[in-house]
Every structure is written in C-alpha cells, then in structure tokens.
Image 1 (cartoon, rainbow, N blue to C red):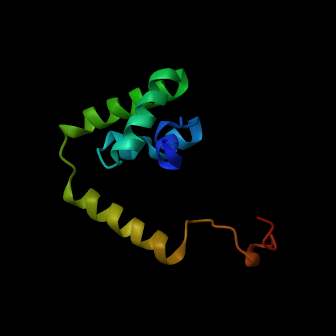
Image 2: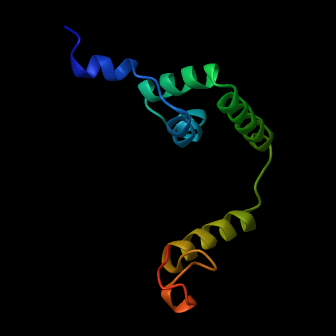
Length: 101
C-alpha cells in the first residue's frame, strides 16, 4: 500500500506553483521532490518552459559579472527600508482610500 505520502510525491504542480518555486529550483535551493516536480512541469508547459529559459539566460549572463560593492550596499539599504517602512507609494488609510485593498 502506497499511502498518502507516496501519492503526494507523484502529484503534478500547476503553473502558479511552478512559478513560485522556479527561482529556488534554478538556484539549487529547492528540495529534491519540488525540483523534480517543477522540472517535469517546465518540460511539459511551454509558457513555464520559456520563463525558465529566460531566468537561466539572465542568471548565466550575470554569473560572469562582478557587482560593484556600492550596488550591493544600495540594494541592502533598499531592502531594509522596505522592511521598515513598506514600499514607496504604499496604500494606507491616510491616502484617502479607506483601506479598500
């Protein structure tokens, strides 16, 4: 008897699930089962396959380039600002939208 875990390992992912895990898979950060399931989906789905190809091209082209330290520091500062203040132009009740989101 295969049980629930055995069936879950063979379940296919949809486009949304593949998109969420694609970058982690390409970076080698996804688990073995997730990576295999996403790879199967990307192989069968033309749209997701094209997206994966674009990500691979970007990653390969950036791999040989050095990122200046100032760029890294600016990105780190930007990320910190987002964590503490939220994105620029974020919707809030004082903007007159009354929390409609």
